[in-house]
Amino acid sequence: MQRKVITTPHIFKPIIKNNFSKWSLGLFTQIGASKSIFINNNDSSGTGYTNIRTSTDQFLFCYSAGLSVRYSPVKFLAIETGIGFTHYESNQIITNGGAASLSITEQTDLDTALTLLSSSGNSKEYHNTYDYISIPLKLYYQKKWNWTGIKAGAGVLFDIPVNTCSYVADENSGLSFLRKEVKDARLNMFGIQASLNLHMVFHAKRISFFVGPVFKYRLNSMFDDQYIIKQHNYFIGAEMGIRYNF
Image (cartoon, rainbow, N blue to C red):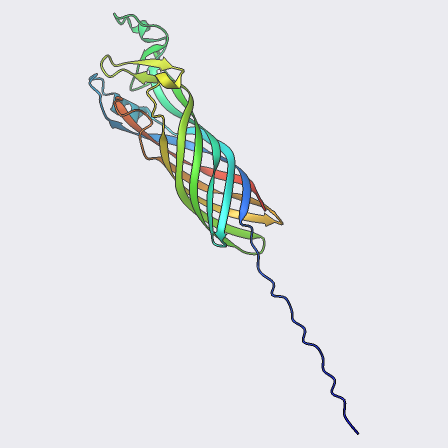
């Protein structure tokens, strides 16, 4: 009797790839406080302007918000860019009512002031404001678990001033003049900041939420090379946002 050999076909299981999202689009905001380092540059007024600004400077509320695009060539690395808006403030103590209130002989008005070392009845604190369009370029290391993850990043931000309301000092007279146009404020038209980020990430399908500390430091001066001081601001705060992973 001949036996029949029954063969079963081989079943090949497909290899399941552990896919990850290469592209993502996010919204972010940064909230914190900023202060500055002042360096004497071209001060011939004899007023000690640099030391006065250093002594009276303080941490002030600042913020940023914007849109970011991120690309991950491999699972553990990501490259990020985008566009954002940054609002920055810097403290200054000036004469209350303009330099004319001190009987200065030359013609002055309410928008002309002296920068002082301390507040008194004849002075006030003034918050110089500066608004920038910011373009980040950052590199992130990222690690993902089931529904959480962590990301650490570093990079630079390129800043372009778009608005200001700030006092600008004169190198010779020692007077400060209120300027409301970027072109008149002696600002550096191209700023560079170094940035460090650490994010805790929470995943929900294609949506990710992130939060963590951020530190930024201005590498070049806020002002042009001929201005009376070099001002380098630094920012300490928190960043949070939401990201859609394609």
